[in-house]
Image (cartoon, rainbow, N blue to C red; front, side):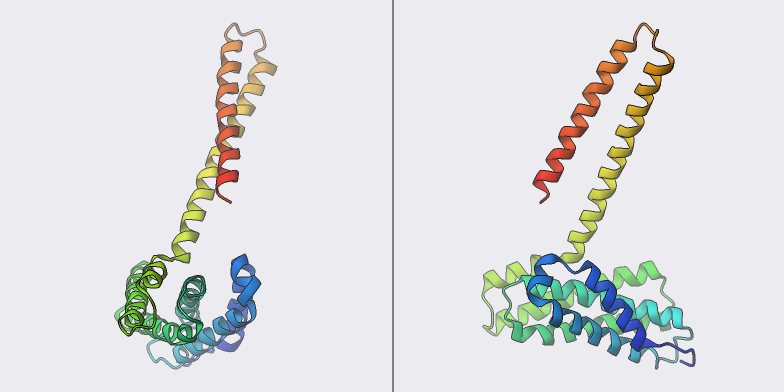
Length: 222
């Protein structure tokens, strides 16, 4: 690829972004090693993509590099939260990084859309992760309990669910605020309306229910 792609600076930028969203439990115990691995895998992927003839612009190279980086981010979190010994983390991440790189690389030659590529990478990465964990199990390196725990961990799915939950909560909040504003407006501009008491009672019930829902969500989602 002739297009200039400063993969070293890009690796630094993605590592800084990773530092901002690293989960608290990971940051407390593994922050330094975690960020070092994110940087190294991102750098290696960026360097490799910069040499691919089929990749003709830096935007594509950055996108593909970011795919590898983000999957290493998520699966490394899963590994650190699992009971798989740390001595096996690097080899598993290397396998995952290679699969992500190959999938991204092939997309450059097959002209897959971004959505198609992301779905393909997700499917293949999950298969590769389970296969790597199964190999450890078959070789007696981990117990079946550890294997089950490891393959059921998915930081990326947890983040998706959190985003979906926050979006729904935001929608409920907007609806509640609109209802409150409409009720307030009715009391200010239509204070002589004969059914205003019914409207106020209805609004009070809805808003009380929302407040209870919101408190419950905040309490049980911790």
